[in-house]
Amino acid sequence: MKNPLIKTVFFTEILKGMALTFRTLFKSPVTRRYPLVKVPALPGFRGLHALAKDNTGRMKCVGCGLCGAYCPSQCIHIYTTEGEDHNKAVERYEVDVLRCIFCGFCVEACPFGAITLSEHYEYANYTRDDFYMTKEKLLANWDKFFEGEKGKRYFKEFWRPMSDDFTGNPEQAMFSKIKRKERT
Ligand code: SF4
Ligand code: SF4
Image (tube, rainbow, N blue to C red; front, side):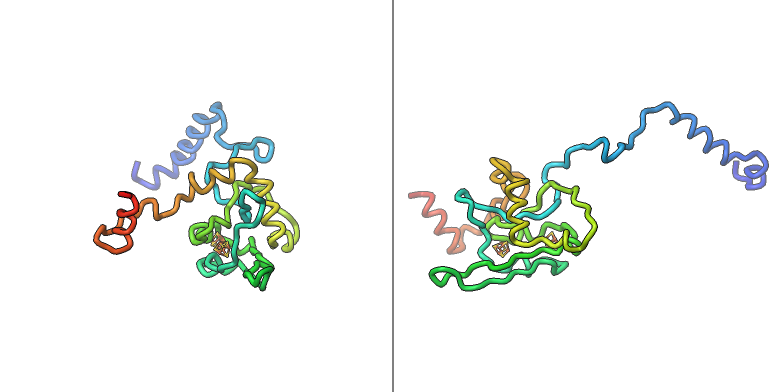
């Protein structure tokens, strides 16, 4: 029915809408009553940040600043100082989560697998401070959300280093060196 006058007189659009409503009236709903009904986050979901620890429980981050340099929102702030034996030490590592867009660039940029995005997404709160993650909070997040084998699996399953996919020119000095190593 193309004539708009006929459509208006016979309420065809309204009848179509009502028909659709009646067709779906007795079907089970596709929406979930969150937070009463929850589904686990998909594996690899990019939620709240955490700072990774190694097997001895030490923070992996060395304070190189690559994550902060890559972050498009500029929401990572790192302050380093001179530690024991004149080593560089991370004094403060902070993430302003309210500015984060969860792109994951920080995770990709880190050469040490030191920053992670956990599957935790339920952290709504009332003050800005609650979303300002300090080094201590980020390390605690690692213990909370990456306990046991989960932390070890994280990088393997979701953030496999790009170098794994990289095939170089065998003539290039660097790769011929690797080849020689493989032969011996
Ligand atoms: S996920 Fe993206 S926006 Fe968020 S801290 Fe990392 S690099 Fe920055
Ligand atoms: S999290 Fe990684 S990239 Fe960022 S400062 Fe620490 S070691 Fe460097």
